[in-house]
Each structure stands twice: as structure tokens, then as C-alpha cells.
Amino acid sequence: MAFIDYYKTLGLSKSATEKEIKAAYRKLARKYHPDVNPDNKEAEQKFKAINEANEVLSDPEKRKKYDQYGENWKHGEEYEKARQQQRQQQQAYSTGGASGFNEGDFSDFFESMFGGGASFGQAGRSAKFKGQDYHAELNLNLTDVYSTQKQVLTVNGQKIRLTIPAGVEDGQKIKIKGKGGQGYNGGPNGDLYIQFNIAPHPKFKRVGDNLYQDVKLDLYTAILGGELLVDTFDGQVKLKIKAGTENGSKAKLKGKGFPVYKKEGQFGDMIITYHISIPTQLSDKEKALFKELQNLRS
Image 1 (cartoon, one colour):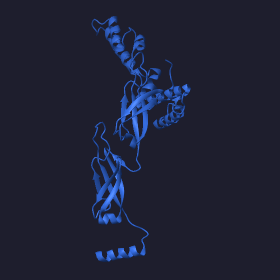
Image 2 (cartoon, rainbow, N blue to C red):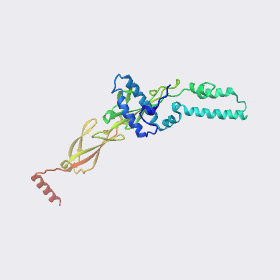
Image 3 (spheres, rainbow, N blue to C red):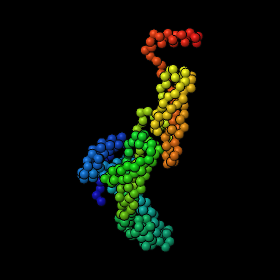
Image 4 (cartoon, one colour):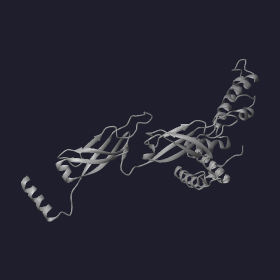
């Protein structure tokens, strides 16, 4: 397998910061995304390479291994452990500290570590390693995750059918087993991790399973009481407003919040906060009536 310079793939130097890596990845991913370049095999391959490079360089631990071991970064630590143990065993054998230890035991050692081979080079070539994990982001609106839905995603050229459960939260990740990079020497494929980025809703604010909504209430209804229609995800609901409702007071609509993740039929609540609107541009008659009320109150 030819060595791939991940820094070069993203157009970066080895001293690139996390912010620079993220910016370079997003720019190139948009440019070569399959949805932007349909049926373009070259763009598809570049998109795969970009994701592979980002998978490694955006992860501090993987990047550290890559910088230290280069093309052998996936199994560099295993090699170092094997070398260290081999040196210790050889030293013990040469000084007589490992009674009965012979060359056949070295073969058994590497076979247990790497699956066969009497030498380090043979062991490295026969070792099986899991493929890289891939990471992707899916941008959704709050309405998209109010009910369970199915989507087909294209990740690294693969079409993946995904069921998105109702109630998924912003920033939440799910794992799709075996949909990452191909395994090495017959090892298992890596996994795909998808992070959900949920945009704010213009009317409702979500906190956990509850929804919050600010509702304007006219002064007259606040003083005298009445009824008011408010929006929910299930349509409008009629609320009874008690007389003397104060600005900033709250009302709860039980079960009208957001669905609870993976608990079918369970919902949070909707919390309504009333904001009383003060009338403006009053007529002379209205001003006179308010003046009369003021005199009555005083």
C-alpha cells in the first residue's frame, strides 16, 4: 500500500493547527462532494482521500501516531511493543534468565501477537488491523427530528440507508458498524460515526425534551382574561388566559414538547412565556378611557 501524505492531501504543512485542518477539510469536502460532482469518479476518489486525511489529522491521538510512525502509523505501537518484548526475551535468554527459552518460543510469541511468522517483518506483514473509523456530519432542522425518518446518505462514495430516530439531539453521534475504512490484511472494516447538527428553530427553543415558546399577549386579554391560540408541532392549541395575567408569567402544555429519544409515545412539555404587548398610537378616546381607569385606581 503506497504511503499517503495526509497533510499534502489537505494542502497543509505538518505544523497546521486544528482550526486550519478543520477549515481545509470543509473547503475541500464541499468542492469534491459527490452531490456536487455526480458521476465524477475523480472527484469521488478525491473526496474519499480528503475524508481519510481528516479522519486521521483531526484526531489528536491518531495524528500523533501518524507523525511518529508515518505509513505504519496504524500498527506502529504494536510493532514497538513487539520489539521491546523481543529485546527483553533475547536479553533474558542470552544471560540465562529465561530457562528453557529457545528460538521456537520467538515464533510462538509473534504468532500470538500478529497471527504467524518467526520474524518481526513477517509478523508485521501478516498482522490484521481494523480499518479507519470515518466521521461525518448531518445537518438537520428541528422539524426533521420531531418524527422518525429514513434517509440515504452518501459517505465516501457509499450509499448508506439510515434511520434517524425521533428525538435525536444536537451534537449527538451514532455508530454504523463496518461502514468505515477497509481493514488491513483482512482485518475488520472501521466504523462510521455520524454527528447530528440541528439548527435552531425560529419559534421553538428545545431544552432536553421540553420546548419553550414566547407568546405575545395583548394588554386587554391579560387584564380581562380570554382565550388564545398557540402553535405546537401538532398544530394550534387553544389556551385559556386567566384575568390579571402578568408579563413574564408561564403556562405548561403537558406532552406538547419534543419526543423522548427511543421512547415511542413519550413527549416532553411545552413551556409558554407570556409577553404582554402595550398598545401604541392610542386615539383620544382610548387615552381618555385609560386616564379614567388611572383615576379609578388611584
